[in-house]
Image 1 (spheres, rainbow, N blue to C red):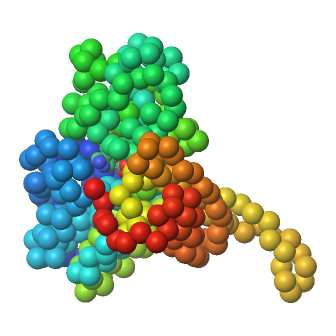
Image 2 (tube, helix red, strand yellow; image 1 turned 60 degrees about the vertical axis):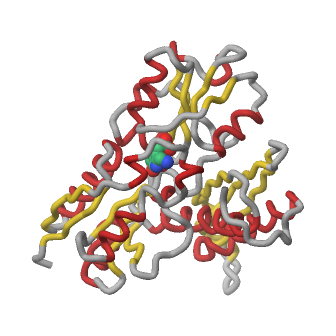
Length: 318
Ligand SMILES: NCc1[nH]cc(CCC(=O)O)c1CC(=O)O
């Protein structure tokens, strides 16, 4: 392909860093690329995400892609709405970064070392619910803004700690500032956290093929598909904060034909959902790598069942 591919990105340091990696990989594969920065309402507003709505960071990029202003859009996967955009193809999910959340605290402290009453900043209802459930006596304080400004609130002494996605900190080359990487058993990340979504127009098959063959990682794609299917199913039945994490694991299977034992890859999915009373419901399941979305939906049904919302009508996320 000898045309120049215009790759659209938001203008934040994080978005530029992750788009830069995608551009480098495409250049290495011989493509000619150009980076186009697109400002989104999410970048211009400082209101809580819950007020301005899901998709604030991604819909302007998607429109620019559908209109032909750009040829490729790079998103943080977890910022995408769960509904498919029929104009676009999710051409690649590159190898995922560490999906876990991370604590950046003053004086090198871990969560367990924070004193009672310590102020911990996060704007995410999912993180807040899981922090509260740990019963540490810390005070969760609402917080928004880019990675740099959030970390600065700790350096300035305004907060004792903040919780952020480890992947975002890593992409900015600042992992040295992390004081604890939170284990999924205490803090399940957002569905698709740490993964990128690389899109092109649905009818641009040359670009779709280039992106898929150069960037796509099938294990990351399957894990994220399971987590997002769980999220989509829960969004339809309740408005609770949701965490989910799928890992590709090795399992032993007996070959039906000759009885020999073989190593097969499977998906292990964990999910968490907060109830209105602030209790956490947790469940886990494993399934075939080739049936990721079914696994996500089955685990969502189990969580809804546990919550007593199994027959709730679609309500969307609030
Ligand atoms: N909602 C903002 C956002 N979108 C993606 C990331 C981090 C990188 C990622 O998860 O891919 C962040 C920052 C954060 O949650 O700390």
